[in-house]
Image (tube, rainbow, N blue to C red; front, side, top):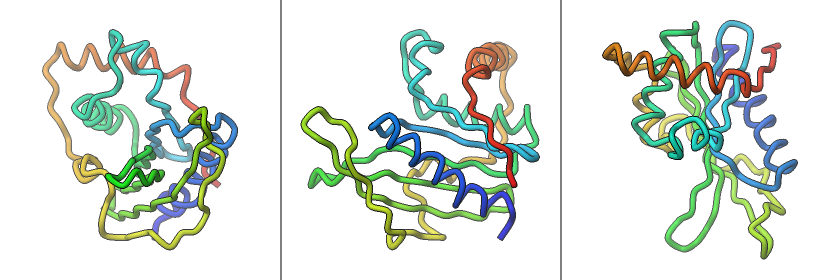
Amino acid sequence: MSKVFDFLKNDFTRLYMKNVFEHKAVNKAIAFCDGDNLNLIYTGMFSEVNNGKGITDDLELYLVSYLLQKHNVKGFGRASAYVLEDQTTFIGFDIKTVDNEVWSQQNLFSVDEESKVIGVEADLKDSSDRNLICPLVKSYFEKIDFPEDTLKYLDNLYEQIKPNLQVTKIL
């Protein structure tokens, strides 16, 4: 396993869970490792910078491809809340590296009557090194050739989100 893979699997998930407990909410996040840093993007801010829209699947893939072109990305991590048909709620972690190492993890969580997160199962029993939770992650690391207007849009979007990146050194 690579250093980036281990860092994403252990430190990204731990950092994300710390934020879940701090804010009592499960917010979708995308993380990428470039060189010696983990860069964490919380996608809730996208409605502010994307004309009132959140981050769509297409925009997520465009952003990931853009980040690949802009940075020396070695790995991506993704975390999001999911609700199954039986109303079971879990946090889904997906990790993929440039070397095609993959890992997914499900952690059940519970909320109070105000929908604030009050507990998250810490057990790692529902993990997989083969099956990703989010199908989008399978397309991470696929290069997209952007038309000039799309590239300009992504440049502008990145400049708006860059000040809100949470950067952590990879040890």
